[in-house]
Length: 143
Ligand code: DQA
Image 1 (spheres, rainbow, N blue to C red):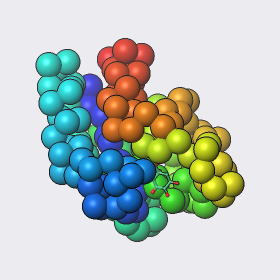
Image 2 (cartoon, rainbow, N blue to C red; image 1 turned 180 degrees about the vertical axis):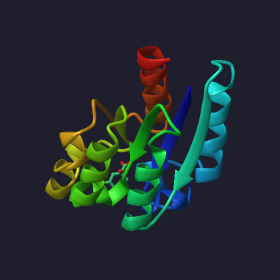
Image 3 (tube, rainbow, N blue to C red; image 1 turned 90 degrees about the vertical axis):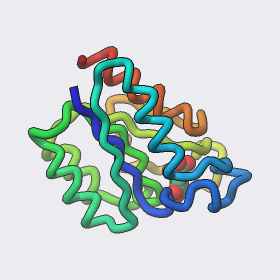
């Protein structure tokens, strides 16, 4: 089993960006945490991040035939991107939507998710643990 963890815009700034909301762990350390978490489970994981909507679409399209599932934190594109939704629908891979913060308790615009029209599960407001829970969900369900 090979899973893709895909992060959208500004998530490369973890650790620096609004630490009161997103915590002090860096993006590099998040990737290390993710790799360590799946290592003993016999599952391969690849972490990718982009600030560009089109690149995220390309990465989702390229996942077809390479990965068995996607853990996706689309960042702000969650709330705007029909293109990301369409890419997910096009490839049809099991997808878990993750948000570090509790988007439901923040500004009204963060409560709209285009990704939720496709994602089979959403993990919201559990901090970085949400990524690990999303991986466990896909492993338990599809490995
Ligand atoms: C986020 C929430 C989004 O509203 C925001 O734009 C992000 C991060 C989260 O992980 O909590 O960039 O997806």
